[in-house]
Structures are given as structure tokens and as C-alpha cells.
Image (cartoon, rainbow over all chains, first blue to last red):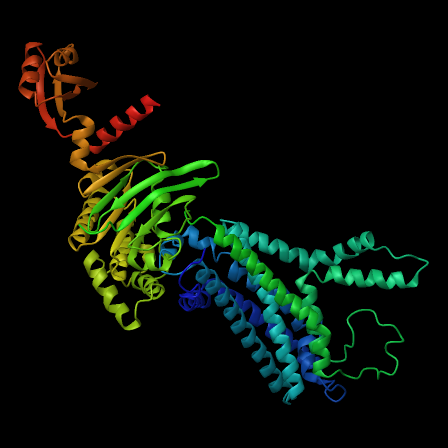
Length: 317
Length: 311
């Protein structure tokens, strides 16, 4: 049976309203302050260390993102940590709050489809995320120009931009997950906790889980040297279930141009390669193309599940 | 008379194994105030949601303003204003901003929005409160804001779910007055309520619901006459011994219910003089005797008692 009328009518209105809500909410203010202070702090503290390497390394600018300066972790590590929290806080109450405020049936009684509400809310979250991350990215680059006293090269800008895109996709995964929980759980607190639980699992426990599972699934055979290689490969695949792994591999490839491979490399494979020579951006991109695709695919998959569940939900509270 | 604006044909909704609405046939005419009455859980809200296309019927079909809510929900929702039970707004936004959001969702032209909102708020008496955040609104103000939303949409049909729920008597009276003025404008109004007596005064026709089934449908006065058999209710306040027996002995009295010194007498005619005489003759002291009018509540109880007994 076909429905008449566009599923997208009203999306723009929902996006604008949600965007206004997101950007003016106290919750968002707090997170922005947090992320700006920590991000800028991490970048600032590393710049001093980076300055010494200006003459030795062709991609000094990218070091601002990646180098850690004790006791602070690198800017990238900070983002890997903070983006999920921002994304979860943007999405965890997006659908259930409409029910709890009893606005859902009134809004859905307007001439729009449910699709418009969900798509609008997701897009607004994504735009908010993009605005925050872009602002932060520009801030760090600006700080770099001021403190290092030299402009970034085109290649550095492009690599930095690719990193920004990967960061937004990574945030999208967590946003979609948070929205999924906001559809499943009627209580916003439960949805937030469920989102944080998944984040905690991938951020802290996944590294411990992976070797255990790997050893159980594919234990290396001591008489077959290639089985050890297989074990490592499987271990990496399991590890890549975590969006955190996908994100950190993508950032590694973009921000450390000398990275030639993400898995184990045999000596036969590096024959003829110049040690420490950077890869062109296109090759770095090709190396992590699967990671980027996987991040996008996770966003789409989670959104589709959310969409189906939301369509089947009863409107009455 | 023109074609009915809302029609349902054997509309049925089953949740899990429970039947919420059972083969409902309704036809509501343009411009009338129609009451969907019944206790909580009788299937009123489910019926309304099916009319709006917000819930899919298990079987049967509905037609609202000439459109099928299942296939053409946008057309239906463009013409119908809906005020849900315990309506909610975005608390941190003002009444005007809330309405502006729904106006945009409703696809009202941008240059018309502010004028329409202003007129709608004026009409419901919220002109001065429109700029304030909804969180300071009272229950009655929220309800009126919901009516303003319907007015702003210029809907030809208003569906109000439990419109007087949680209102104090004063707010209820004002609200019913507002409904009357909407009817005066020619709007078709479908309202649901479990407070039967309240809506008795505003509804042209009512449908009595119980457990998903339509019991009775018709004009309030017709129902009173049909179900109660044109009986008169007389309320008596008196003191004395065995007065209930004395009243019951009066020819024409059908039943007497006692509650302390209060007697509720059902009779075939206005037997006030005869009853008064009987009380005096039985040495009772009569303080009040008044002809009460039968209410929908009586109709409802009588009718569904009969249904239960038959089952």
C-alpha cells in the first residue's frame, strides 16, 4: 500500500527547531566548554614540544593533533574520548522526550510523516556535531599558525580535513546509537546510561576482550608460522567492531603520513620502500577507505534500525 | 444534508490479543458536535488515532473529510486539528514560538503565520500570555493554547480527546463556552470524554462506548427518552421512619434509592404532589422535593447494566 505525499515534508522545519534547541541548551554549552578547554589545552601544550621538530619533520602541523605531551594525552586521543560523549548527549533523549513531554501526538497530528521527525532530529544532531568539531578544528589550526609561526601546507590542510570528516562520521555512529536507545527506552536516563555503557565497553574494555576472543576463535598453531599471522588478522578484525578502533586507524593514516600499513608487515613487503618516507594522501586514503566505509555503514545501519522501530511504535503515551 | 465528514466502517483495532475497538460504525455530519463517551480504556483514544492515521486499524476503514487516513494521512491531518489527552508543549518556549513551529510543520505560508497566531490567541484569551514560556501556563491555558493551534490551522474538523480533563469547574465552563463558539463558526467537533454529564450540554449527538463496542448513538434527549423510558427523576430530602416504603407505595413510582435522608425516586410521571402527601401522611418531615433531570450518566449505567445482565 502506498502512502501519498512526501515523507520529507517538514524535515527542514524540524531540523531548524532541533538545531536551535541543541545550540541553545545548557547541556550543549557545558559540553562545548569542556571540549574546547580540553581540546585547546591539549593542542597548546603539545605545540611547545612540536616547535623543536620544525626542521626535522615535513608534517609539523599534523603533530599538533597527534603528539602527546605528558601528562596530557594527544588532541586526537581527547577527541576519540569526547566525541562519543557529545554525540550521546545530543541524541539520548531526542525521541523519548517528545513522549515524556506529551508533544509527540500533537506534532505527529500535523501534516508530516514520522520520517520527517526522525530524519530531522538526526540531521540536526549531525549538523550540531559538525559545527562544534569544525569550530574546534579551526581553533586548533589557528593556534598552530600563531604559535608555530608558519602556515600549514596544502597537504596538511587536506589531511586535517580528511581527519575532520572521519571525526564527524565517528560522531555520527554514536549519535545514531543514542537515538536508537532513545527510541527503545521511554526513560531518558535509561537511554543515556545504555549509550554510556556501550561507549565504556568500547573505550575501555574492548582492548581486553579482543585478545581473549581471538585466542578462543583462532589460536595460533605453534607448527605453522602463518597461523600466527592469521591470529593477528582475526584479532584486528574483531577489534574493528569497535568504532573507536576504526576512528583511531583512520586518524593514524591521515595524521601520520608515514604510516604504510595498519596490520603486520612482512619484510618482503617493505622491500624497496624508503623508511620514514610519507605516503601521498591518496594512498593514505586508500589504506583506510574500509574504515571510513565501515563507520558510514554503521551510521546507516543504526539509523535504519532506529527508523524501523520508531515507525512501529504506538503514538499513544 | 451533505455527506458525513467522518465515517468509520467496521473499524477494528486489536492490541496483542485484546480488542480495543470492535467493529465501529460511525457517521459524523459536518458542523455537529459529536461526543464519544465512555470510561477510560473504552477505546475512545484508539478510535481517534485511527481517524488521524496515527494508528493502523486491524481491519475496517475510516474516511475523514473525504480522505483515507491510512493512505492520505497528510491530507487528513491538514484538515483536522487534534488536541490529545493531556496535551503537551515545549515548556521552555513561549506559546507563540510553539505555535509557530506547528504552523511551519503544517505548511502555512510564512507571511501568514504571525497574523494567524495572533488572531487565534486573541480568540482563546491568551493574547497577553502568548509571549511567555509555556512552563508557567496553567492546565487550562495549555488546553486553550491547543485550541489556538487548531484555530490557527483553520481546520474544518477538531478532534478533542478528554478536553476537560484536569480542569477546575471555572476553567471547564470557559472551555465548554469556547467549544460552543467553535461550533458557531461551523467547525465539526468530535470530543471524547469520560465525564458524561459535562459534555451532555455541548454535544449535538453522542455515542456511548464500552469495552470497544458502540452501545448507543443518538441525540442526548432521544437517548434519555429511549433508555429511561421517559421516566422522571425526583429528588426528595425528608426525615422520618420507613419513608422509602411509603414513597414506593405511591402508584407510578418505579424505584426508590436511599442515601441517608436523600431519596432518589424514579417515576413514570411528575408525582411530586403525591409523594409529598405520602411523606406527610407517614409522619415524615419533608424539607425538599425537586424534579431532577435524568442525565447521560443514568442512561449509560442503565444501558450497560442491561448489556452486562444479558451477557
